Length: 525
Image (cartoon, rainbow, N blue to C red; front, side, top):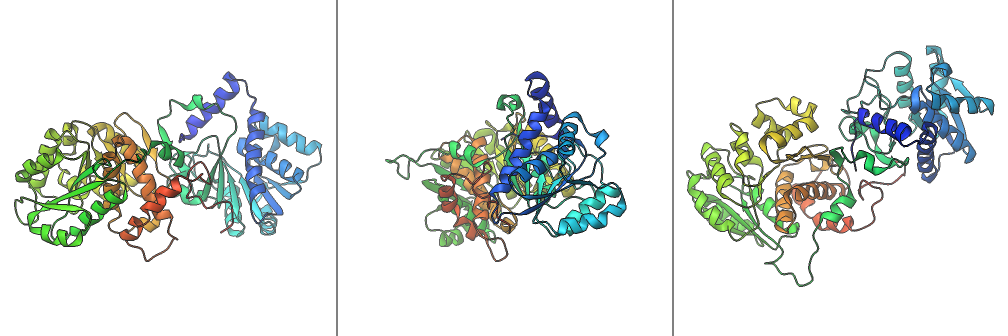
């Protein structure tokens, strides 16, 4: 599913209206009906609904919503924050119709109107935010900010139209005051600000409404949302006559004294992800301890430069073992020593396998990340923001402030598949493609979950998936495993590992919405 900027959405609107000939007023009617359909499915059903409609086409959608809800038998209060003479043509047509048919509405035009607005809001079962749309670029102030505050302070559940008022459609930044919605019905395609924090939190659950845009119009867009249907199509079949030798073999280079748990988690994640055989090569001094922790994963010692530190002397054995497997993953629990950087450079140049790098392997490359270009095929790298900041010599705040652009630039510059972990993990390809993962949440904010992701991606590659597809499927399933547990404290990485099987099974069921089966449904929390 494409993920659009405000400018891209505006251009698609223009093409549908001017080039394809679908009138704007029809698009507005379609948008309004998508919202009404969602509201009519809600349980318990809201009997009294307050629609707050602003200027512009977002406000026009609100006018349609109010009219259609009244026709459906709901009690509707329509509050308009707009001067009628300023409406664009489509909104003006809907406003004239409401006036001509005597539809009850009230204007909010002065600060003194906020008191009765607050009373009106508190008497509703649901508030529809059709105040401001995706075109907002500057912080809210004055009366508009006061209306948003009143909506938030009412305590009534809010459904936002297209995007919560006050959220930047491109960055997810809150432009001063912003509506805190429980649901958002966005039109045609999700907007970036609905996936990026803090806008993602303000949006609540997102539903995408089909307003009859031909899908071929957006084929040139390279930014997308990973969906359950996409991942379902990607996953390879499990042949009935398969055996452990045919289900994929993974080689992990991981662990060191004191960090053997990272190797255990990555190795077990590779098995849980479906690989038939998993080998873990680790520094010789830590291998006996690792052996005591593993049952299904096969471990073997590697020569070390000093206790726990791998270097060029391990390259020969790693490359020899690589002949027996389909993928090489390296990094969990490895100290980022200069000797390790030299080993990685050798593997980049000489190993023909798909490569996955994480944790210590990435920190070892901090002085020269462009060396990733030496790989025979684009490697997958899975940094969290702190690791990427270390690689770039930048501040974490810089990374977080431009997650999409930074991931895309690094993937292009280093010829790698970048998996930038965090809230809304971003996956970028060297050719400019970029996808944002909607699964996962604060449950996963605990040590070891990154090691699970490394093992899972390596496992999917070993089963025959291209590295790009394995990265997309891996982050989606990894996040979905976290979503399967109730939100709250008390979890460790092993708890999510135990949910991998359930995540794979759930993926085969019809999703609750286009974004995936993790959505909670249209019930008030």
